[in-house]
Length: 599
Image (cartoon, rainbow, N blue to C red; front, top):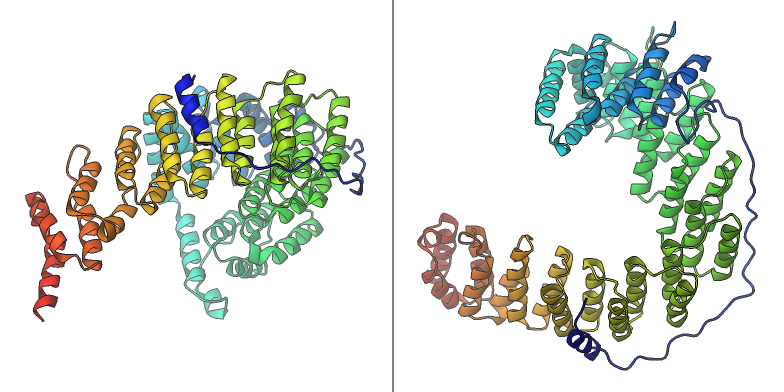
């Protein structure tokens, strides 16, 4: 907790606050679409989202197991390795059905945990005996998990197994050769077709597609060529492999055409492909396409996990202006599958409404949420605070804290940070500092996040000195662990304000907190405004156990030469250690300057 003297110094940074915006309502806002509840029966109804169902019942009652249905059920059992393995064994024993490589690799990933290593190695052997190989994605995932759990022996054994099987797989070599042939050509032509020497199996086709995934047009051309070869027809595995490749911004048209073709040929997108494609779309900020994919899967037999709805709503709300149409499309599909709205889903709707200033509608959502037995918590209130601050209704945002206390909901650090950030964004930095003092008085400890918000807020008002004072008080006296980004930003701002001494102190402090020193902005500043002594202090600040690297010296000398400060560079060189003076690159740099002067 902060001492009273620090609280007084903190408040001394503030100045008189300007009048804040008053609460306004807009009665003309359109009403929300009604939220309805329906039930639906799907082909995957044997597996519940709550407990995954009974593995024997699921395996025995799948009338016609497919690659997609097996992947879907395995995903449901991914937290229950023993049930997943039991299901896999039962479905594998079904006459006329053999799981494909994606199912084997998924099962292997499920078993790759410390408490199931015996099953893992036994399954890996059976997978190898069945003629399947560990794909690179699964191998890297398992290797990372083993290393994280400090399973050194398992990591080494897996790496050895993967290397040996990769060398033994002749088909893998053929796949790589085919992929190289395709990638070495600018476009698809008869010459490429003639060079392809590939045993056409679904596994081989999927392997080539994975290797040429960076070239969607080429991948599609190869897929069409392979599909036209006599004696070979694409199956679900090949179609899903191509779907992952085409899910790119420039090839979404071909992606949806492929999905339609899969429907016509009675193939479904498997759940593993959905997860990877959806994740890629959201990472690429293709939210509309992610919603359309969610709708497609919710209409099919292999529905996404319950939590996908909340995750998707959260991603929609991250946009500066969330699209409410997308929000309610997701919710309607969720309800149509027979799910009732959870607290997470209500929060997802509420988040988008408050973000675009539809506070009346957001209040209606809260009423419905309460009727369903869900009380607002810090997540809900912080969303409201964020929206009010974004709308510059700062007084109303502060009043939310009174409502929270009246509802016996104590504001947590995240909610305080949202309020403080809202004031900083609106330019009310002094009020934000007052809120920090109030937060600490209420025994809510600050962290690196709120410190970063306030330091950047002060710097945005050309108050880098106040930012430095706050940083020093919070880090040195209150022992807040700062972020590396805060160090970098404040160092840059201090140098802009000519505060080299303070910037060097921060550079030294970075070493204490185990961050690599942020040296980049110093050489150019010292070359323009500093002295030889400043350069020496900078190099000392970079020193940990040894001298700074020759590259650091070289950067500083080049900056001095760029500013025409040759004599200062020479003076500094004389004070450098012997190995720096004799460094080849530094000697060449000074030699080039002498040659220029002579000429």
